[in-house]
Length: 196
Image 1 (spheres, helix red, strand yellow):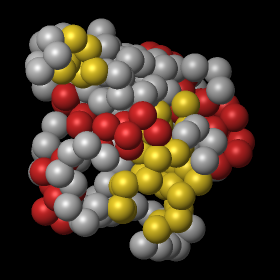
Image 2 (spheres, rainbow, N blue to C red):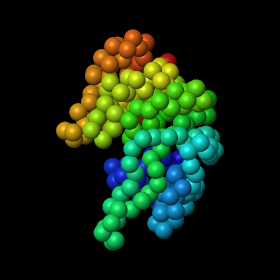
Image 3 (cartoon, rainbow, N blue to C red):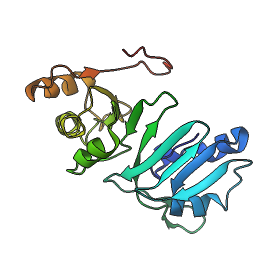
Image 4 (cartoon, helix red, strand yellow):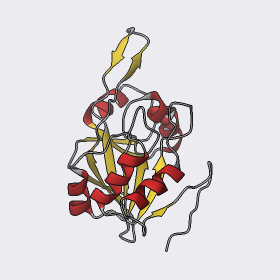
């Protein structure tokens, strides 16, 4: 399964080449699926969908949800922006029933409470870098709205503008009284983290 939350180059990156090599199921926002239809994606199962839709494949259940960000890229051939649909987040239900929420690049928004109520994720992957996404204080509010007990900070520390840190997220959670929330901070390249 391949999931891409939006068309910015730091997320789409070399996904087309990886899809051509590995042939994943790839549910994505409708406009991105149209563009992918013009690319060499090999045996990838590209499926366009939209927010609120659910896709089942290979033992996983994926529901697309809202995100507040931008989503295009630059089309060098046309010397103009390339529209690749709206940004999205995903709730993924694993084979055992555990649910993960990947917010993509977003700011906090009130309907995160609905995502929590409707989908009941246990773990949230939330951006904390600031500048292009929410920072640690807003991410702590998102944790509260979602009702998750574990958060994995993403989209931070890769260049100076993304200055939010997991330590700042932990402090913001404590300020909100969310002392039982676990902040997982895996090292780059780490592929396994033990959960209770």
